[in-house]
Image (cartoon, rainbow, N blue to C red):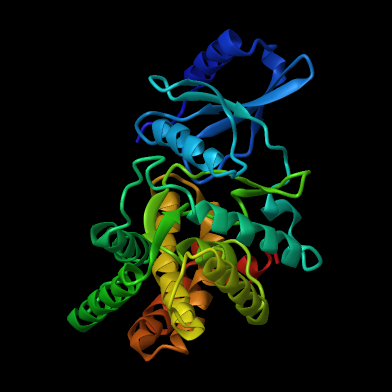
Length: 348
């Protein structure tokens, strides 16, 4: 897969110069994410912008621009698009600052910040479906995500050979998780609504990033992404209180109707299992295909989330047995996979 090159950076600088003149040393690289996008803060005459290099063969700048318009119309704080060259994959967007949740969350401010994020999520879920041609989070997409766990985590990363019984168990588990997702009310879904994509703004609002993969899908998906974050975890009591807070706000907004709290929590818990299996596959792929080993240290957190859910839902006994048996045996013998000690030290 093609990766960004120095030549692209030169081309990006030339393009930025044509729309926002700045000096070469006024274009400072910023930390990247799990994608192939690169970000640069550019400055000119006391103003700053963010230049984005999004390679055409891996990134969807057209979706970013379209969805930004839809979310902005709903009052969501997303970057303003100042200029775009979709043929090259270059964007110039507003600078929302350095207040990423992941850099600032702690036990003293988390309740306030998550309350604000929940308010923002409810607004996102009220975005008009006619404002952009959002894809559907359908059965095929949900299944393809589940299969990332089998292909990339179990197979490519751990090199585990499943027995026919284990293969059948996984297929059955995936089907239950997909049915759980499809029976939920649908809304606009960000798909990566978590601490590394949210910013604390100076006016108390929440800045939202990385929304180009948004779809129409299960109402609990983004709430799971936020409250059972792949990169930071919180006590169960906190999570339960935040779920209750969201439930009441979503009910008042008409997003969910005629749903009991018990039913909603079941949706939430099982949706989390689907997401965490998917992310275990993605993190393995980032390591094996893209050389990004740092994500492996977060996999134990995802295993813990799944095992915690399995203690409440008998239909997850099979996946729990697999994780507690073959998987944890391979993890403990594979020093490259990271450790629970490493994972627990991240953002906690």
